[in-house]
Length: 188
Image (cartoon, rainbow, N blue to C red):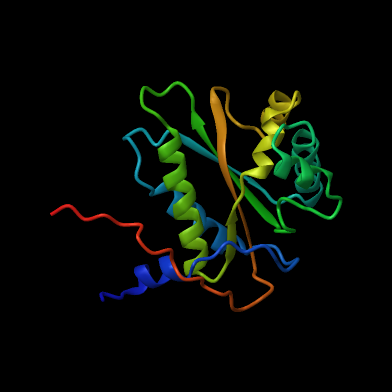
């Protein structure tokens, strides 16, 4: 089997849900963001990254997402919203929201997903922990969603699609579960 540094990073990356309090170094943050900018896209690079490192603002976003979750018909999300101990950002010191221009002629979600994946892989490659976070996006589906967009300086015409948290891992090693069998079909 072929092995190189890129393939090794892809295989070892895991969703980290326990972080040290220490903020990510600026040089590391810039390296991760640059990797996001180099993601494949439909030719327009119609994304925008919002980096939030303010603990008070992160706490408010967590609470807003939980309040929205409490109103949903999805039992699992409702339970998380009602769980006082649950923090959807897992205490990470940095959140990156990936928004896309809603006025592009091609579907943008795939471009934003590719950018998010690049962020996660770049983080792993330099020793940072990361986790793709859906739950916090619920804040944008609340009645205060437009206020959140404004406060977070998300450009007009851009929609938050994805987000990821970054930080230093509390645990040095993470178990890598086996992949499910029979997920590939060959037609040759």
